[in-house]
Amino acid sequence: MTLVFSGHSFRYELEAVCKLFFPVVSFSFATDGEAIPDPNGDIIFLTRSISGERAELSIRSRVSGSELKKSASVPLDDPDYEHSCELGLCRLLFECLREQTKITPGWGMLTGVRPVKLISRLRASGLSDSEIAELMDKRYFVSAEKVCLACATAANQEKVILNMPPKSVSLYVSIPFCPSRCSYCSFVSQTVRSFYKLIPDYLDRLCDELRFTAQTVRSLGLTLDTVYFGGGTPTSLEADQLLRIMNVINDSFDLSALREYTVEAGRPDTVTPEKLRVIHKNGGDRVSVNPQTMSDSVLEAIGRKHTVAQFLDAYLLAKSEGFKAVNVDLIAGLPKDSFGGFCDSLDRVIGLNPENITVHALSIKRAADLMHTGGEDLGGSQVSEMIAYSERVLSDCGYSPYYLYRQKNQLGNQENVGWEKGGNVGIYNVNMMEEIQTVLAVGAGASTKTVASENNIKRFYNPKYPLEYLKRFDETVIPRKKEAEAALAAILEGRA
Ligand code: SF4
Image (tube, rainbow, N blue to C red; front, side, top):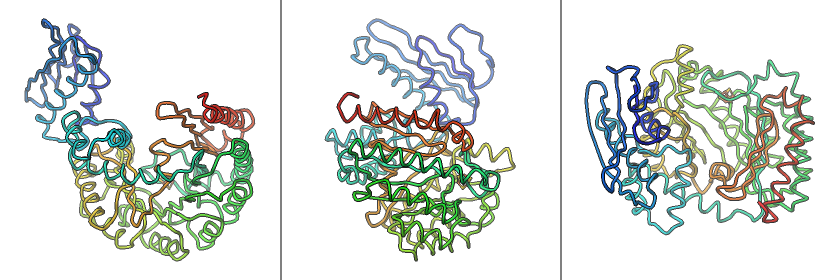
């Protein structure tokens, strides 16, 4: 598809709108007067010209043989002239493509990762949810269902934010190892088998970094709000290895104000009673056990080396251990899955009554990787139906959304949503996703994020891979920790 621009430089925004309708199409670009690479193919002319006191915006779109024209205008003395022109052209393009493709993206033209941030700002400005719905439709074509979802999410988050201790931070512990690699995964985790030898050294350095971080928290008078072990699969470690890390945390940090302590036990094939006991006895109060689907044939198709029966065993073990909350992840859009199959997975998971259920829409990048390795059956409209079903059924069953984010190129232009029941909001997820609190992160692939305000966030990256982390610990990890500490001190002293 070719996009031809004239009289403006809104290429990035207009291409983003096109991608909502044509996520896997590659685009060529031309400016007016240049040779058009494929003049007989799909082509869209996007023009701004001046006529008297107004800018005339026009779109001429030819897609799959259907032709459509739309136009609008903006006064030259508009106080936000460039932005009004950009938004005007995006809206015209969206309307054209919606008509021509018969696709209605639920999030309309909103392409940001964190739509709830925008909704929260509007709520804080005093707008009612119905006023927000009207504005989001008028401005961005967001559906009433998605606005309702985002408003409910924002309302749930407000309680978490209100109860956040002053001068508080969260701690993220990265365990970038997995028992084997799932075929849809784009994460940089290493399989335990091939990197087994690295683990003792990795734990040594990780504990050093934890002690350093605890010293920062103490010296700056900060309060630790949440702890989150993520990966990879933290329960890839043995029980004694988990115990060692948790002991260092217990010995080095003041956990008296902690509101949540999560350990991801993502892969059911790594869960044992001993590991769960160690986690629970040493402060962990929330675990995540993730089947992704309740179909053995889909599990096989995505290369997740466990069965539904193993998930059920692991889940019941976690419940019987007495954690305050257990989260279960599902993915919509997996290869070999179907609408009926996804609904069945969700219904069965709801039947288990976990405190948290997180529903992800598969990203196209991952889907594309799967396609290269023989995956199939991927379709955006089907994923949209799955997500709509999940939102309807989870609400009906007493769950409410507490965090929501979008990734680039998700199938059906959908989103990932964390749902909770009984007031069990996953606090770390809210803090991290809405970027409302500093996260001190340790381990390979982890990034510390210091938050001074919404528009003043700094990131300090650790080396991505365990081997690199070990080799560059002294020259990279500790210096970056010191930089993050200085940034935090500046925030606390009002200098940031
Ligand atoms: S368990 Fe999770 S992090 Fe590990 S390979 Fe599978 S999807 Fe990736």
